Image (spheres, rainbow, N blue to C red):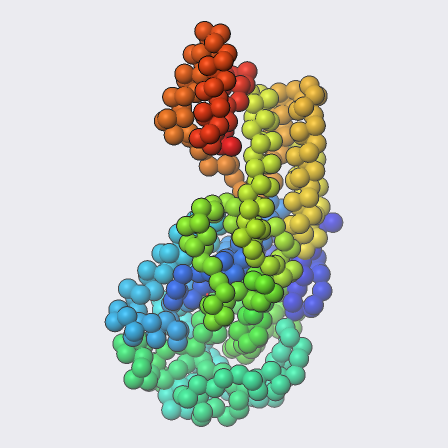
Amino acid sequence: MGLRLFNTLSRSVQEFVPLDPQGRKVGMYCCGPTVYDYGHIGNFRTFVFADLVRRYLEFRGFEVTHVMNITDVEDKIIRRVRETGSTLREYTRRYEEAFLEDCRALNLKPPHHRPRATEHIGPIIGLIRKLEQRGFAYVVDGSVYFSIERYRAAGHRYGKLLNLNLDQLRAGERVSHDEYGKESIADFALWKARTPEDGDVFWPSPWGEGRPGWHIECSAMSMKLLGESFDLHLGGEDLIFPHHEDEIAQSEGACGHPPEQPFVRYWLHGAHLLVEGRKMSKSLGNFFTLRDLLARGFSGREIRYLLLSAHYREPFNFTLEGLQGARSALARIDECLDRLRERAGDASAPASPTLPDTFARAMDEDLNVSAGWAAVFDWVRECNRRLAGDGMTPAEAAAELAAWERVDQVLGIGLRPAVTAPPEVQQLAAQRQEARKQRDFARADALRQRIRELGWIVEDTPKGPRLKKA
Ligand code: AMP
Ligand code: ZN
């Protein structure tokens, strides 16, 4: 059985078959951040999900080209640029850097391409021109709009992802003051004419000075880097409509894809991160940035674990207690790995197949990561049982460690960051060791107690004493 994924386009779980006739190369595009502020961990749930998809495809032997755009021109950004008196570039680069730093803290693999919208104005204009030539775009006062009616009249279907009544959907949308000239409320901007509020943020175009709409950026950059038709497009579920629906309309409108080879073959959407049952978002004010959590003493590794613990299509409720739980769960894994390492010593062995096989069986079913973690914890229990008796040879321990490393290529939890005890504690440990040598056990015990009070535990192992955080 191969890998199966839930495709929003077909609303069903489908076997994943890449476009590449050799079945190896995979093109994957994930809508990236709008760099107007620090990312909140709801945003990062989506990026951790994209990282999981990428890593699992690689685990399965696919050669992935991963693209994630940076939206560095947009209404909210322009407003902030104006308010802070900075240039667009200064402003967005600061938050782009912060975003990349957060990605590193979460151990996200860097995408192969990270195109910025402002560096693709040429291809964006080119794509709008194509839409004009095909009769799907019209100009009003220097702005260019996409006509859904003309697109449908040409035999295309708008609403492939949602399958809902379009007019109902668009009716509730806000129409900004510069969009009153649209032929229909459902139409959306491809190019926005320059307004005084835009300040220095504008580019020349065949329709006059202005800037691109958000949806067209993704169509232009994804097709430029991955081809007119590619395998996977990802994002959070809020992007299904209108963003992704509009991307399909623009791309297929401009290129005229044949039905058997659409713009994107598999659309994957991650469910939201919730706080007390509501979407974590800037506008609701119920959000934590990654930085907030790091400042509270949680590690990127613990946050990654928590964000990865639930299936990507399940809404997931974020709590600080959940993060504490992540800490204990990771401690159980770390403890087991420490003991395996100790038992393995210098032995090496090829990976034992059991853990990677059970893990892959779970992940093949639409990335069922919860079942994947269950496999990991069953394995921890089993290893602990075998380690407790003398039922595990050094070579077997090495084989289990290699198995973990294979699975961790996907989970990306990595090794526990080395924690070294402060000098004071190390000194006490050395004194205790000395006392033991002198057979002064009362003093050794007192020192152990003192160390404990400082938050550390001394464990006597065959290789000598080891300090562990209590
Ligand atoms: P933005 O920077 O607002 O363009 O969003 C970046 C990504 O975060 C998009 O894929 C959104 O769908 C996703 N996103 C926004 N809010 C949440 C949330 N509460 N949970 C999960 N993903 C989210
Ligand atoms: Zn996008």
